Image 1 (cartoon, rainbow, N blue to C red):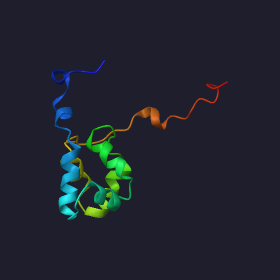
Image 2: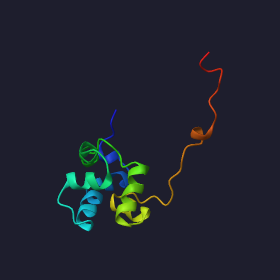
Image 3: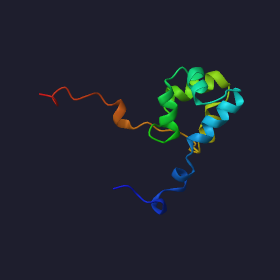
Length: 103
């Protein structure tokens, strides 16, 4: 069940990838999302999916944005409303797979 807006934390409400994309377009003197997709070397539907919040801005895309704009990763995250001081990866991602689990 999806939470309603009153149940969302304030950090989640502030998330706006459009601000990030629009700022990059302006800073790089591009005309539109298609030009941004070419600059980032991603397919145009990727930008559309991010705009419509169907796809998150992944780490590799964030790094690519940094490479072409020279804007820090921290500032790029801030532009889309990500105000977390640190990004933590789950402990489960570092645990080896149980070899007997698939038997």
